Amino acid sequence: MLELIAVIVLIAIAITVASVSVSNSLGGARIQAASRDLVAALRYTRGQAIVKGEQKTLDVDLEDMSYQAPGKAAVKFPDKIEVKLLTAQNELIHEKAGRIRFYPDGSSTGGHISIIAGTREWRVNVGWLTGEVDLEELRE
Image 1: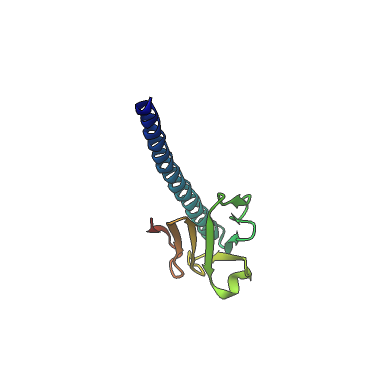
Image 2: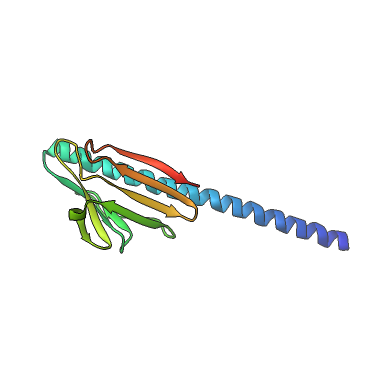
């Protein structure tokens, strides 16, 4: 009987370890997908500025945990993540909201948006001179 209890305890420990590992993997995939969606929205905004020949902005609302590209519905960030916005001072709407502006020549006001979940952080960078948008993983 003691051996049976020991086996059950070992199985329970193995299941716990496996579930934590799967949970961390899913969390990493969720933050990476949110980051890639944000990159796509920023590139879309830049493309619209170039094609339309007028300034376009991607608005980020940290209070509502969402962002909005021009002519598109607002997109919510996933739950249980932290988002930080660094943009030009004149692009801040208030302390919890701001925007990144793109110009018809493709340049931008620049900045970056960090998406953080636990120990994982992805940063979406926007170059001010070229308007180029890229994604980098800072820590895991």
